Image (cartoon, rainbow, N blue to C red; front, side, top):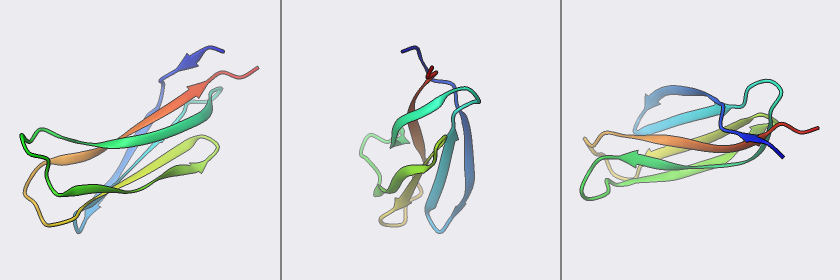
Length: 87
């Protein structure tokens, strides 16, 4: 089954230390699975956590990251999806 990593990412504007990111597979591909991580460049991980990670529909995965304590550190959620051409 041929796979692919083609996706379109959408980031919603940050609000109160919460960042939402969605990734959607391109037409002709099927979302098989997904997940995410929180990306940062700090030597010590900032106080952030994944709050939500789930399939919104048949071709979109959503992840929500949030600060568990206010931080000036720069960070963002990264969505990882597995998709394939079926049929």
